[in-house]
Image (tube, rainbow, N blue to C red; front, top):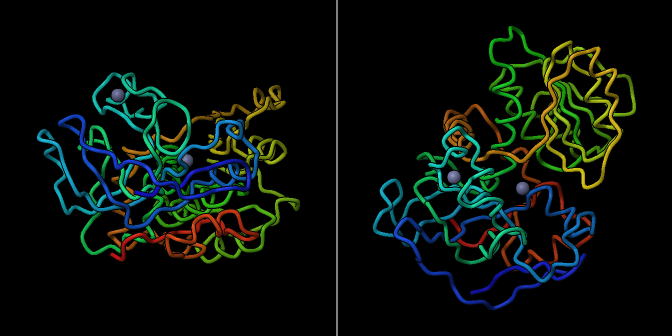
Length: 340
Ligand SMILES: [Zn+2]
Ligand SMILES: [Zn+2]
């Protein structure tokens, strides 16, 4: 089969590799229907991460697909099921997984698809994917939904739910500020904040394309360099920019919540005295996709969420290397392997 490899910054290619096989009775094999980039992948390709020297390695950790084989001990998924694949590889039952922290799985650690971090699990731009603990790591898609626009359900899309919904619980008339910049995560967050949290949602960015999407999703949209509100119950930093992170941190009500989903590969100076005086609950860490995939999928099935508005383009599989290394990959390009 073919596997999309990150070779070096700006260079991707398809390599012929052996197909994965079922190893454990809890494994499944999934063939992608559609795969997409995590916002992080664009930074990997652009040489903005420490992964550059580790190529070639399989890239990609977001897809929806069809189950084509299951081990004897799989009971929740069957051959033919359409599923979302969690980006992380987690056991589902250890002390961390069982409290909703699969990205901190005690069995598989940092293991994931599409980055050279812990083991060889391939990427979601492979034509076949081995999924350990498939009953846990796969989420069946609801009937009647178009799988294409759910390609991000196993990471960035579910992160939209995770960054907003638990933090607004119990707040009347919530107000959410989303500080965009990385690509899709801020936009999925807007979708959840507007339509699921019913929050007054303000989106800040300097990119006219993303700003137009956020407006279509129902946010009030402002240039990041203009005047900003400072009364958000929840602010989400989806920027990877230290100045924007600072703005997000100083934008919440006393004892408000700031979730940073951008990744900072270098130390950042923080206004700690201001944060102390304001009282800020700051979370920075990997997304815990799997428990957040289920409510996100349900909201899509209900017609509440609109991930199709976040999709920036739909392309044939063959074009993955050219689109992703080209001048305008878009904030959420989706690539089709098998028509649904
Ligand atoms: Zn990711
Ligand atoms: Zn675990």
